[in-house]
Image 1: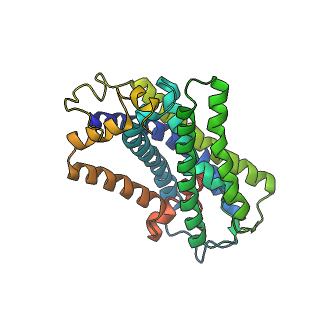
Image 2: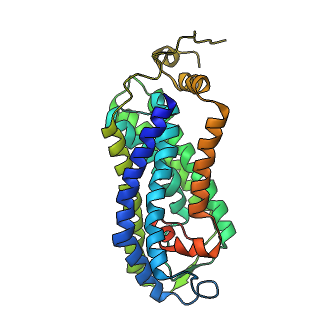
Image 3: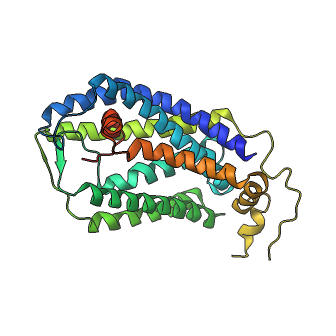
Length: 236
Length: 68
């Protein structure tokens, strides 16, 4: 039963990963490599591998990135939280995909937006990793609170429920206000940085949406999770 | 807590799913699954070995993760 979920999560993840790998192959690699021409120093010495290796490995990384999301979010989290996630069918999958995007990317990017190569950040790597991890935890918390808000407003108008779901998003303003300043410097034109940033955002959105879509297309298990649950539910 | 939400979701709840997983999965199975996911994430994001790190450079930038 649980392995069914894991299998479907992995399949959806590979499908999403292949699409995302294609995105890295066609857009990500070239865009990143092109912006590298603005780079002055890469922490001492150039890369130790050839450009071809980076190209191929990065495409592979994209496929594995999708597999990771598929297994973790749709193979594991979906199995446990399916009864609690709002909506049904494809909507349910998209709700989980949205929560996943918020956790992995959306919340952390509010403080640490994606940067192209050639842009140096003032904050150290360790500090940024700590902030990234903390923001991921906050993103997950906000997603869970949104789900709870939806459940708690049962029997209300849909607009009220959606409004209640949006309320926890306000929590995301807190780290934005208190985050340390992270001034960047580099020769990449601001418009190009913005274009790069949004390309990254859309790339991740396409990945999550593809996983959700394929997962919905794969359908539900033939047997509901509780069918062969033959012991009494104890509520002591 | 013991209000209408409990009866409404009695048919299938998160609690049921946890019980279901406990009943059908063994400890090692869970450990292997969690370890695989952790290994995958760690390899893609945090391995500092120059060869692997530089190979995945474009991927990390494309995914919005910068570590330099």
